[in-house]
Image (cartoon, rainbow, N blue to C red):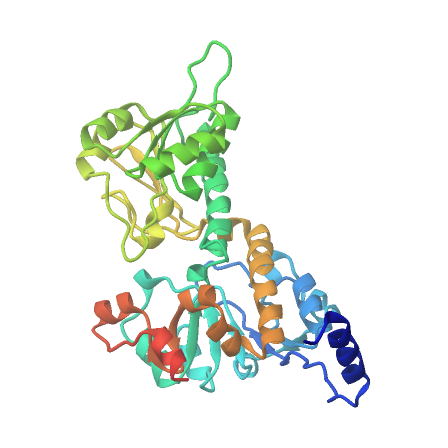
Length: 405
């Protein structure tokens, strides 16, 4: 019987014999070629990458080309980008030759024509405002299209949606404070309260991220708030987040109507997982609100949650109906475009760096469930069930496509 000492001696002897050379296998890296065209959509002022992010990407071996003036409205000059290592292009055609196109708004049909095909497009999706042939045009170009607002992180959250929602929640209350002042033809009241004067009443519809930050900003100014949502979990989470007890309720029409009748400000912050936002405030409810009160419909980019809402713009942001001022600008984050650009860039840059390490954005997509969640076209094939059913187009499950890729 062989003892342990003999076994050790045998192993030691074998270790001295010539061995196969073990080479370290380097991770496959790929240089990304990223194009950033100037936004052409009305009053879209944000840019997807700030100069600091461009410098980081260039220093990691990637190439960035950006159209002249793309960051100007956000106070990023061409020189800032060129100093960071980006190439400045003086035509959109040159930018659209890049392998990866980064945009804020989805490209117009005219911009889609500039695409060379078989590229990767990363932008918002914005289903409610796309022309009928938008998706077909991308499919014909054999594009892989990723909606950054549907990308999930490792915790299953939507990081870009959350960042933009934080901005929208805070900014909506700042907008309300402006519009309530007499200089902006408001009721002439301060959003909040002081000793001896009843506080402003703010009703918030939706207890998601927009609702959370709107509630926090309102309380910080001294307002009295009421929050409505059909999710008890979200309402409880909101209470914990605020660290104090506030009025909360499910969306019951009778209770909601009573709250609206005394409200000074109503924030519409309901987000739909897919498709249109549910309209929870009827025209009759709006007609019984106080004269001079204010509605800010943050949900307008998904159709709005007030029956009286209609899309407005930054240049003409408000209208009145039944004596109630409506603010229905679908792109509130663009109002604070520099802050929003940093928030977008902080989320997109790590994804691009990791994609380069994995061998390219398409390879990264294949390996990363969170990015696949935002992919609605893969190599020209529609992979989004909701889009397929809505547009009556054939679609395939992306996991099955990737398995056969």
